[in-house]
Every structure is written in structure tokens, then in C-alpha cells.
Image (cartoon, rainbow, N blue to C red; front, side, top):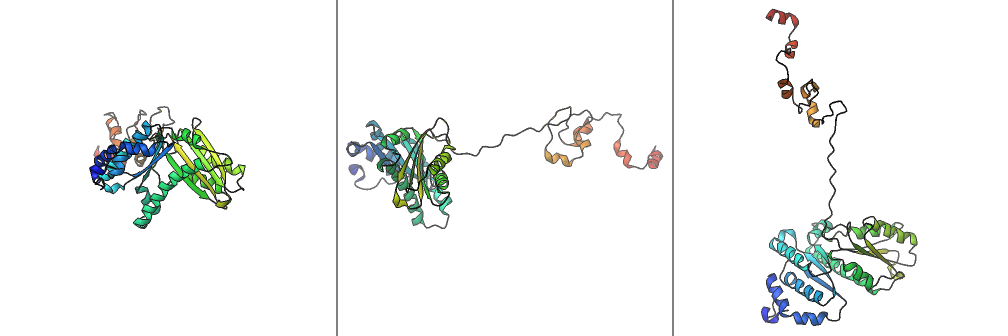
Length: 333
């Protein structure tokens, strides 16, 4: 791209150079895309070419009416400026693609551990990227017993917004549930939840032993994460080459950037069962004797004796004098 601008070199980690290089060759990009029904854009965000050129390619594809899916990686959090540049590039790219799948490098450390070699870590990231593209392509290209074709993929992928893709295989008695749960987990993808997805396509691959019970178990597991408004399409492929394994591939789109978050429990106010119906003091206040926490009028003092003393009438007896023996008090009088 941009041979005149870059003289055959890279973009020098400058997204502006990457964008200008792609703009210089817009016609070449259009010629390469022309006639395609679907386009995959794969890029490493944070540098110059991927961050700057990918949105230009997506814009050209959108103008040509081509279904466009982007699968991109994000740099490590410690890379500073590259991280910020990648986020800006992803936001720009999202304006033109139909669906966007993000693979953060930071997830590699969480899933693979700190002791993995750098070579194997990036190989794993490339494998997830390849799996995302290959999984979608397999749904389109491989005929199945229950067929999910390009029209189904178009229905799902045309839901604008963030997307997640998962693929997992399992063997054994509980293979259907395990494969479905692992596909939903998608540990190396961006931390987006399947909850709220507007469309989901599921492809099940197994040998001829695949039973209706297993199909129902896979779909029930995935349905637990969706709503009644979610468009769910599924296909089933019989492939004797997979042996005893059952593989589940799913693509969920239209997530809209809703990140998975744990719901915090609502704070419940504990109320006394007495007639005053006042709120109970903090639990650690119960280390203070009740006579010092609450005055005689039934009002909570806030948990400390000072308020109770302040409300005591002036002519009230001094209770501290009761600690002195009676004969000594009489002598004092």
C-alpha cells in the first residue's frame, strides 16, 4: 500500500501514514474486493498499517455493499501509546464494519500463564484469530445435515456492533454441555458477554453418533445466555473424521459493547421490629451497651453514648454514683 508515500517501507507505527497509504491505493483495494460477498479484515491494532489502513479498507467495502467482518488484536496494556492508538483505531473501524471481534493480548497472560514463551503466546493469538475466521468460513462452506449457509451468516453478521466468536470441542458422556460452555466462555476474546446479543449462529460438528439429546443440550446451554428477542440459527454437520469429539462453533453479534459485569447486590435496610421502626445501627455499634446506644424515648442515638447523655434531663439521678457503696454516699451527703 502507498508505494509512493512509504517507498516500500512500513508506516513507522504512525496510523496517519497507514491511513494515507491506503487512501492512495483506494482503487486497488476496490478492485481486490470487487465481486466478493463477504470480506474479513484481520489486523494487529496499535501500529501504523493496521490501525490506519483497516478503517479505510472497511469503508471501501461498505460503499460497495460487501458484508464486512473485522477480527483484530489489541496490544498489551503496558505498551502505553500503542494501546491508546489501538483503541482509537478500533473505534474508527467499528463505524464501517458489520461485526467486530477483538482479541486482546492481555488475555494471553491470564489464560496461558506468565511462563509461556513469547513465541508460543503470539502463536496462540494467531490461532484464535485464525479460528475466528475459519469457524465462520466453515459454517458457510461445509454442507451439513441441518445446513447453515451464507444467508444465515449474513443475517447474524449484519447486526451492527461488537461480536464474539467461540469454538470448543469435548469428548465423553458430557461432551455436548462441556463444548457449549467452553465455546461461550471464549477466554481469549474481548471481555464481552453473550447476554444481550441480538443474533447468534451455532454450528455443531460430530460423527454419526450425534443424538437429538446432545443437540438440545448444546442449544439449551447457549439459550440460557440469550433472550426471547435474540435471533438464534443453528446447523449440524456430520463428520466422521472428528472421532468421538463434538465441536461447537458460535458467533454472537449485535452485542453493542455491553461488557460483562457482576451484578452487585442491592443494599437492604434492616429495620427494627419494635414500635419505633427505626433503622438498626451499624453492626460494630453493638459492642456498645444498649443503654448507651438508645435513649429512653425510643430514638436511635446513632450508636454512641454521647447522644444519650445529651438527652438526659438535668434532674435525672447520676447513675455513676451507684458504683459507690451506700454508706459512703451517705457520708458524702
